[in-house]
Image 1: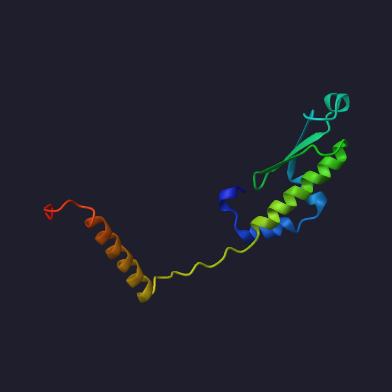
Image 2: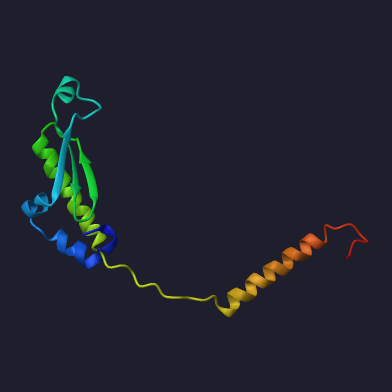
Amino acid sequence: MSDAYLTYADYARLARLSDDDLARQCEVEVFHASGPGGQGVNTTDSAVRMRHLPTGIVVTSREQRSQLQNRMTCLRKIRQQLELRSRRPKVRKATKPSKAAKQRRLDAKRRRSQVKSSRRRLGMDD
């Protein structure tokens, strides 16, 4: 399944999967986290990057010192993305300006034109 062919209903179905099923659909990569934490950060592969293969969603977590907790955080982030994408798009309605709005715009253009024409030198009414 590619991201280009998924509808909001497909995302909704994926968002309802259990954590175990969702984790099975993911590719996991662990790495050294950067940032504060000193030696503990530099020596352990505690940061986790997860890619949800059916959708292509990629999330990273390195907030916790535990790889397991970071995995759970990644799953939660993927589920949030799926829920966000599963919302039905709003129906857009075409609108047009009212007669009064059109008239106001034309009046403003006319006033602006008069202001500019009053700046011209006399005798340049070409």
